[in-house]
Amino acid sequence: MSRIAYVNGQYLPHSSAAVHVEDRGYQFADGVYEVCEVWQGNLVDGPRHLARLERSCSELRIPMPMEHKPLTLVLKEVIRRNKVRNGIVYMQVTRGVARRDHFFPLTPIAPTLVITAKPTNPAASDKQAETGIAVVSHPENRWPRVDIKTVGLLPNVLAKQYAREQGAKEVWYVDQDGFVTEGGSTNAWIVTKDGVLVTRPAETGILRGITRSVVLDLVEREGLQFEERPFSLEEAKNAREAFVTAASTICMPVVSLDGASIGNGHPGSVATELRKQFHTATHLDEIY
Image 1 (cartoon, rainbow, N blue to C red):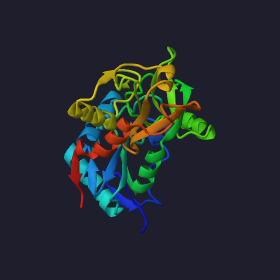
Image 2: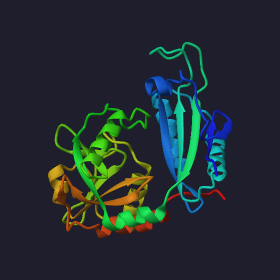
Image 3: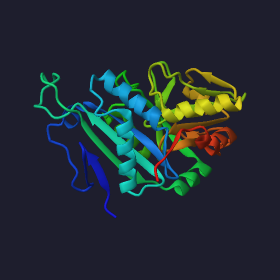
Image 4: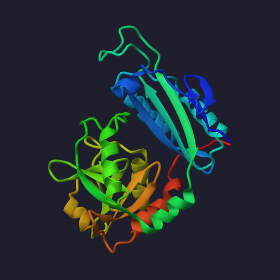
């Protein structure tokens, strides 16, 4: 079955779907995006993702391409046309097409909206979670506004490639004070030796992850000890366990950092249980 993409009001074959060469997303990375999980035929946490998309657009002064309700309908239609029951749906909004100029266009232009969907393999992800992943550290080198989910991801691309070349699955950025900010495409967590969950506050320096927010809801629901504060590489290496969160990975245990084992070098019980319970705390919107 050929994949289908949505581009500015049209459902097109993925292989031929395209935007104009002077789209500002291509010329300037002048755009934002969201990735939602599709789980067992449900769109996961759609309202939260659309609220964050609207915030990102607002911060860049890009108008939303449509209201939340019709946008949700388009997301579901793209998922249905691609017959995705477990996977991800990607949406990207750019300022639109205009003559190449650093200034915003003088006359209003329509934003560009692209939506794609693809299946993933939950069994493979669960198998990875049984062994956990390795992480390496990398100096923070991104622009300060990482709270906006922009398509300007070149630093992330280079950092994640560095991780791959070191035999790791993810990178943890470290700020100038020696504290972990977040992963190349994930939020970072540790569990201290006293059993306290710790993750960096999402006010500055990190993206307020939707999966992160769900985990915080779970933490509150289960009455787990929790601190929202920075943690250093050294504290992470001495932690009982660690994990990362994202829509594409849910809760993924981290078993080593810069080659040093975390805890006993195996996935921890907290991350494992949070992963198991994750979808009991999400907003599920049936697609099929």
